[in-house]
Length: 409
Image (tube, rainbow, N blue to C red; front, side, top):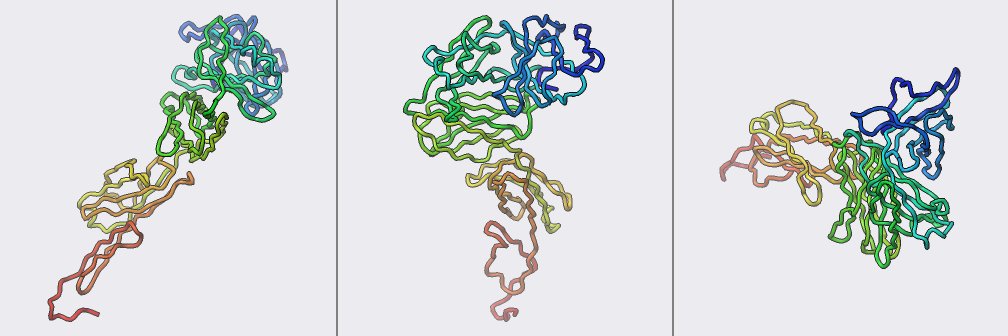
């Protein structure tokens, strides 16, 4: 169990499940860690949503034992004007007992404009767009989905920033999207939905390959490239396992979605943005590939000092420069590099030696840089390059002959 729900020794406030009883019990805790202590569960509900199907939501009373079907669930507490600010994650096998506590804070309500609330065929999707950090640790997203007929006087959301959208289940696409808006405690706000008009909106939900654990694992950068220009996301929401990104008012036409985090990267995704449409993208962020470089060199080349430089092609941007120590047979690893064509250059006292490697598949790569001494006899009139278009050769053992001396055969 994770994500703001903590396990430990059962305190006195936890009810006794009784002999042979299996199930789960969740109690609300004070969000102020220093104050500690449990809060009265009266009026609060435990909500479970299957990890692979956010459209399903199960409810059980807080402070009492309950037994959901076995599975993996997102879990949070809510009731009245209170709600946990992020979701937890639990796995329940159906056997044994599980005790948990969840910090709970203030909440507000979000409702639909009256003209949109009358369409029973649409769903309201709400995402808490505030911080998912707790004491430096990231938590799972808190998203709510309701048929518009169930929204009524409002749906609970934690205080802070939020974003909402109307989903058409039959056409499987968004028909309206809000810009970020603020949810205030003990208050009700109308979600400010809008349509793209003559432009295009984009919603991207990106699954992390490497779950983030702390604030240092953040740093996502999402952008849409069109022509020669690049536009960063208007809104990003980062959780333990996902990155949500939103763009408003994009130019219709072909586009390229780019994304990267500290640990993962999005392989190039081509888009066709249509006027008046909200494009919805679900994609996977993949672990950045590692590149291993091994050297096979004549011993004399080490005397002048060596360095390796990795560049991204075709622009030639330097990703890393590393001075080398004299270690025979060593493999030099460049971690979390870019999934693209790379140029690796070995810099020596006699000049550079370079080769290319393609990591655009996202797989880890290996490159052997092997330099050989070429011995020539006779006149060295032309210094030819070594194998490959970007290689250089090194020459030794040749001598100059006089005009009268016959050339060696």
